Image (cartoon, rainbow, N blue to C red; front, side):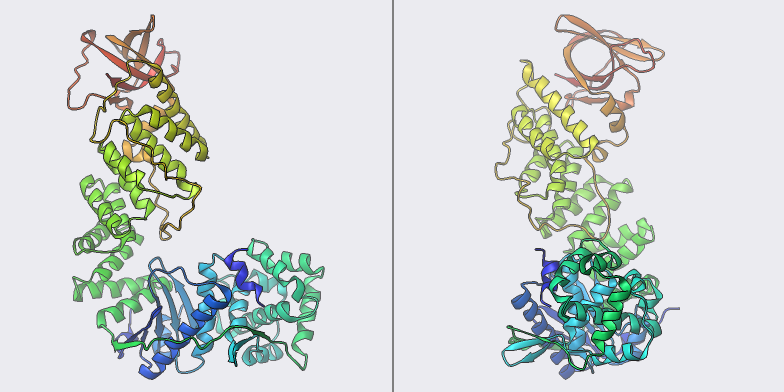
Length: 615
C-alpha cells in the first residue's frame, strides 16, 4: 500500500508587508518568518512540530524535503492580502523545487487547525497522492480538528463553521463537486468556495464514519487516487447513484449525534526550545518574493528579485531567483549572467548549476564553462544523477572517454527508466577505449532496459559493431583516444534493479540525450548509414560529381562505398594525426573500418558511409 493511500486508511507592484518587523524562529524541522510576535510564533512552530510528530508516529509518513519547511505567518489580513493566491485563501501550501512553504494569513487565531490542514497538503504531496481538490481539501479538513485527549488523539470532530455553511447555503450537485479544479470559481471565489470546502469535508467525514460507507471508504479513496473521478468511483463502490449519495449526506449532517475516532498517538511531542532572532531583511524579503513567485504572481516577484539584487549584489539566493525569473521569460543571456554570478560566489544549489550549464550549452558558450558548472553541482550533490549523466556526455564530447566512464561507474543504483541512458553511455565509452568484451557486457545491460525504438536500434547497432570487432584479429588492443584504462572494468555493484531515492529536477523538462551532446545533426543520418561494418585496406578515393567513393579491399572482395555528405561522416581513430585523403590511389595504404548503410536513390555503390575509423 502506498504512503498516499495509508494516509487515508485511518479514518503595479507594491510590497506592503516587506517593511514590517519580521522575526525568524527556527525549530528542528521548520523555520518561521512572522510579524505576529515571539509568543505567537513560538506557539505556532511548536504545533507544527507536534503535527509532524503525529504523522510520523501514527502514519509513518513524513516530508521528503531536504530543507526545513518554511512557514510564513502574517499578523493581519491587510499584510496577507497582496500575497494571497485567491480571494478565498486563508492559508496555503506552496511546493517549490528547493523547499516547501506554508503561508498563513493570520497566526493569531485558529493557527492550530491551519497547521494541521496545510501540513496534510504537504504530506499528500510528498506521498505522491494524485488527489483531486475535493478529496485533498476534504482530507485536510477532516484531520484539522484533531485534539489531544489523555494519551490518545481525537480525530473527526464536526467543524462548526463548515456544518453551519451547509445548513444555510445551497449545495452544489456532487457531479459538479467532483469536477472542480484549482482554476474553478468554486475553488477561488470566496462566496462560492465556502460551499465547496464544506461539502468536501462533509463527504469525506461521512465516508469515514457512516454505516454503509465506512467499510468501503478505502476502496473508494484508492479508486480516486488511481485516477477515477469521484463521479465514477463512488457509484461503482457503493452501488448508489450520485443523487442517492447526496441525499445520504444530507441525512448524515442532520443527525443529532456525531462519530469521532480516538487513536493511540500523542500530540504532546517534546519540542526543543526554538531559536528566536530578528530576521535578516534580505532573507525576509526573499521569502516574500518566493511566495509571490510560486503563488502565480511572477511579475511582482521579478520586480522584488531585481530590487534585492540591486541592494544585495552578493546575495546568492537573490541572484539565483532573478536568474530563474529571466529564464522563465526566455531571457537566457540575463539568466546566464545571474546564474554565473551565483556560481562564482560559490552557490550550493545543484539544480541551478545544472540549468546554468544547460544555458551555456544551448547558447554555444565555451563547453569548459558548462563542465565547470556541472563539476560544482556534483560536488554539492554527488547523487544528482542527471548532473552526472550530463557531465559525462560533455566529457565524451571532448573525447575524454576514460574520465566519462569513471564518472558513470560511480553510479551504484539507478531508476529503471534512466538505466538505458546510463548503460548506453558506458557502452559507448568502452567502445572508444577498445574494451570490447566489457562493452558487450554493458551493451547487453543497455538492451535489457531500452524501451524506445531509437534506443533499441542504437543498442543493437553498438552490439553489432562490438561483435564485429571481437571477431576480427586486427581489432586494436590499445586505446585510440583519451586517458583511461584500455580494459575498463564493468562496475559489478551497478544495478538498475535497486531504485535509489535519487534527486530529480521537478522544475523543468530539460533532458540531455547522448547523440545531441556528441555532435548534433549528423547523428540522425548516421543511424541510417552505419548498420554494417567492413574492415579492409583503403586503396583508392574516386572523386565524382555526386560524391566521393572509397574503394576498400578485404576478406577477398573490394567494396565501393560512397561519401554522400562529408559533414555527416564521423572519422575516428586518428588522434592528433592529420589524414590527407586525396583523389586517386592512396599512399600509404591504411587499414580502415567503415560503417555504412544501404545505398539510396539508385546510387551505384555498395553503401553510404556513416563512419570511417583508421587503424
